Length: 211
Image (cartoon, rainbow, N blue to C red):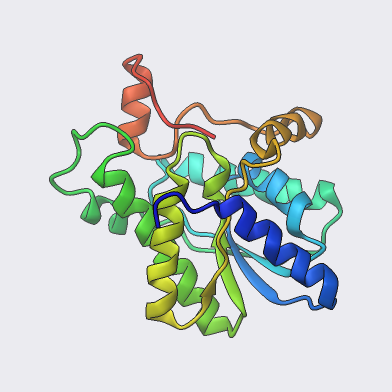
């Protein structure tokens, strides 16, 4: 689906909901508070949202706990009554999928497998909960491949039987707005994507993906 305008697809969906007054249930996979900030303020009035914190790539455990705490604080300070489902910290699935790919540069096959795993978990959770749609905050980052994320979400949707909501949350200055909200609420903006390999690259002075 190369060349697809995923931002317009989201705009069209929101316009339809505005017209009909419908408010479907949505599982929103959240990678961190900064990426969730704009996303929540942009779409919360259109959906009955459940946040899903499932990020086994994050290391060390203290980082995982802190990012989750910041997400919870953001929701409180936004004054939103949104439930947050959190997976217990278990990095084993990530290290399993990363085997043999440890030395690859970021945004490569290891990262694609990581994103696919988290989207698959989100789709299955949405199916289990009986929700209408699922999507992820990951498309807000200019360091992430929105086309891959959306294509992956579409494939997983066919597997799990729950509609995937296509998006490109960085559109309409979404990424810029997330930075503004991070400053407003004094959110922790991590300087590496999450995994130990990203952390090692950052410590070595290499370019890394970040929110």
